[in-house]
Image (cartoon, one colour):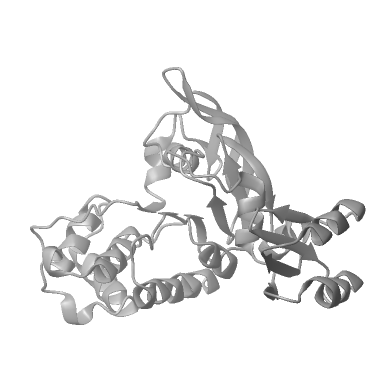
Length: 302
């Protein structure tokens, strides 16, 4: 069963097109990652999924219902963790969960049981009586995730849930999301952390300029758009550049550095190592960041 089905979805703000005719599906139990540079249209896309922003044209189906006409029924089955901290600063950790439960008509006893489960799951039990303003960034983010799960949603939407967190806090969040994945919860994630997407997501969509430019499993995308093996050569000489022109070698010439994408244990690895690695060479595995930069470019954007 497809939890989400997008058909030629377009979103315009005045004359600006933020999402330009995208189509995709999210299957039940799938963890889908949505990647792209700033301004690619990721946040605009997910805001249409939970009815925050209306679809300009096309059709967005969630749980088999049209978000344009059945958004109330859809929202009762959604959990959303937004980029911004939307917690109530005047309430305690536990109160934030209990008040949120009332939006879903969850009775008091059930809400308290659910809050207790989530406080324990996100290691927040010792902070139940703390005010939100006293929480660290990592604790606040875990509380936002807990709140998004209060109504036991069938779909959890995560918009850059670990942005700004220190490595320890980020890995704590990853651990909780991995556990939810094991339980079969359908999740959709936007992130700028390529290691996060590669570690957690079953499948990825890469967006740029409002369009989907690539999709697939992380390792499949690496094999298709980069390589299993990567060689980085600092201060490359003319001999190397002549060699790359003469041979059909996938590479990026960045001026002071050349990145060569090669098959693991292939002849290219051996030849480059013997002929061009007299100075500085780095041999490493290909990764999702290579894919992202090759598809969306390396230039800075506003």
